[in-house]
Image 1 (cartoon, rainbow, N blue to C red):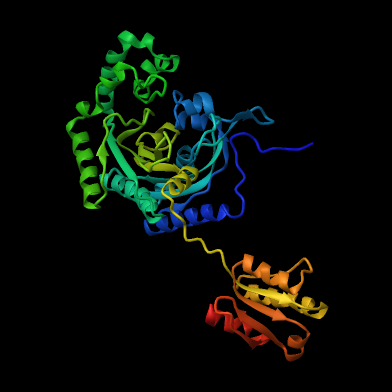
Image 2: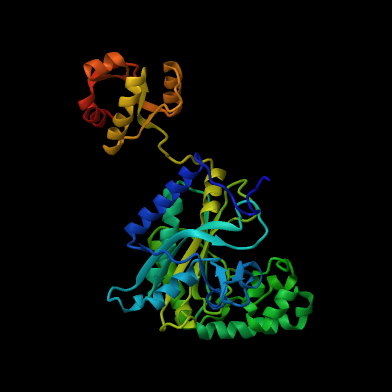
Length: 422
């Protein structure tokens, strides 16, 4: 019987996994400069957390979650995103009590959604996300957006577009909600069943519908920007001011929504305009969610964050033909001739590796010529040849693979020689 990988998942093999490691390393380094600390939460949580934390009316909760009953009949869900778990931990572990606020966190890990697999979209995917909890300052909104842009730019992406919008405060949202209901209700029967159920539950989600996005009422739907009160307008203007101060170009898109009830003020997406990237251009999405901590049992706490798919990021790099500077060389390959040399090479390689050097040797009893070919495949900087003559003299014949020069180096001096010359 043969087995195949489940649909919507992928094996990331050597040769590709190094790209993932480089991207994740870059993300961690940027978070370190912004003083965001890593948090690791369980891959599964109680289902109710996501129902509350993501939203009952969302496609994620209604259609895409991997949910099952455990042996005691409790409903458990594989995490479909990282914000709800992060905020749950923030509340449960009372991070809000720390004197240093805001609490700035990031995560990198697998998420799970049962959706139709397509280019750059998988049922198991890796998400990098950032959450800043505890500040109502629009400067933290600009910081979170700047962090996301910094990651893409540091990796070399150029065909980027940042779009932002304001969803206003609770008062503004309420006025906009009533306007949306009045706008769509007379002809709601022309919309899909999802939109019909959302009319009263969360009409903002209608604007995010993929099925009915070309309906004429979508183009004429009332804009949230027309319902912002003075406080919300001032907040949004400050966010824009800070982005401009950071020389981060952006566009205001009044149709950009984050459909959860507790989202407010800033919403944003980063998109790729690279040719050939595909019809789905969004790389990253985020927004302010001041009501989320309360929704899951915590104190009133403002928050803002974003999440991005590592798969989508790598696809954008490929679309722009960007080659990551991944090191593919090794420091030294040990070539042996004779049984005594093979035996000595085992401990020699161990010593070199313990000294922090990247070293390999033959494990297949290859001839000397084949061992040199293996060294070439590993892009070895040096080859250390060890045979009976070298053992007798307690040296290796060390060849520089770039210049072709060769010299005898004492075995007990090999580590220091390589460190000095690599």
